[in-house]
Length: 188
Image (spheres, rainbow, N blue to C red):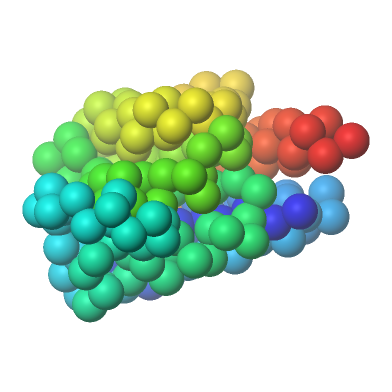
């Protein structure tokens, strides 16, 4: 079993990475492979509703000049996905929003019915709005949403500061344990 963890932060090793790494470590303890996929700090274009992804039948976006098709391709070998993002003005990063919309529209068949979750990392406010926004595309593809003992949020501003959020890190570990349990049951 394998889980794709998508780091939607423009900072490769920032707080979002730290939260996803906590999830990856627990998945490893359960014998589940994971990959943290950093979407980078280059632009990710938005969907232009051209419809070419639907007429081609390839589960790929017609635009191949950013990371969207690589994420779809990676997801073909994965059993679940977790997206993570810092919170900007109460929303996930713009790159992650564009990625989610295009990957779910163009490559939705690759994601359908696989467990999914989201992680929001912020300094102070807007985390629940960003968290809900990241989950919405998954619900459109009948993907079981994996939860924790609380919303999947962690707090910190300076790089690495989120590791000091004891409750947030415990939430990440519980999320990972719940995801592992669900995957084990689905594959039994």
